[in-house]
Length: 289
Ligand code: UDP
Image 1 (tube, rainbow, N blue to C red):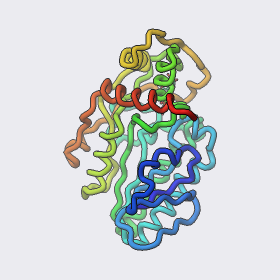
Image 2 (cartoon, rainbow, N blue to C red):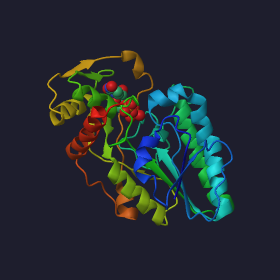
Image 3 (cartoon, helix red, strand yellow):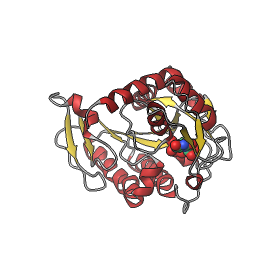
Image 4 (cartoon, rainbow, N blue to C red):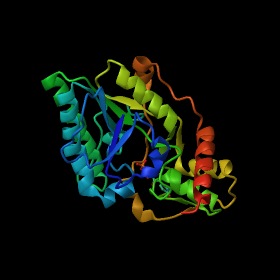
């Protein structure tokens, strides 16, 4: 197995446990540039991209490039090796959705020039490119639309709501709610996502498939749950109203397709997944930097 990353938002610490594994190799590389891999390749899984709103606002051009050029290079690699290809797409292709819950056939409500446009349009272009390679070259391609996912090894400062809330809860601070807190998300644990991705890669299904949980909660409710699991009694505060521009008001996947074609559904309850994630962050924070 070969992993490639230019580490602009990732960390090599996350693969430290694989060092010394003879079946694993890490190559420091930006896949927006030509990709070279020696030897045979069975499958190319293209997950490279900033994914936190704060990160893709910080790296808007890299985000567009990795969705466009990075996807093109990754498809070219897969084609030259006769490998199967899987694109990590996103619920952001639905934008601020006018249809609820979001089914794969919904074409979305995206503002190309809004603050999230760099990510949303890059992923929409990436999906179009994958389907073009499938149709034009008969390539074996798969597209997973990933909804909000959390778990150990997220960056504590990546700016997304799960690390923000958990960091604040561990420090005994009030959790920061953006906007009025009525906006909703559905949070799945990382292990459930990975199971869905592996099943999709092995399946024969070509059109995009949503992978996410259908337990939809408001950010106010989510703050209550995080405080309860982390036993933080500092409550929550309304903060940073300026960050709310372009923030989708609702998000919840329709996962009937994943159930039907992959026989997949999430197994891990939010409270259990949060408990595991909080343990990880507590341990990470207690290590010397
Ligand atoms: N959010 C919040 N407090 C925070 C960070 C995020 O209330 O400290 C809200 C944010 O406005 C959004 C939701 O949490 O409505 C999820 O945000 P995130 O950045 O995790 O990703 P998104 O789902 O928007 O891509």
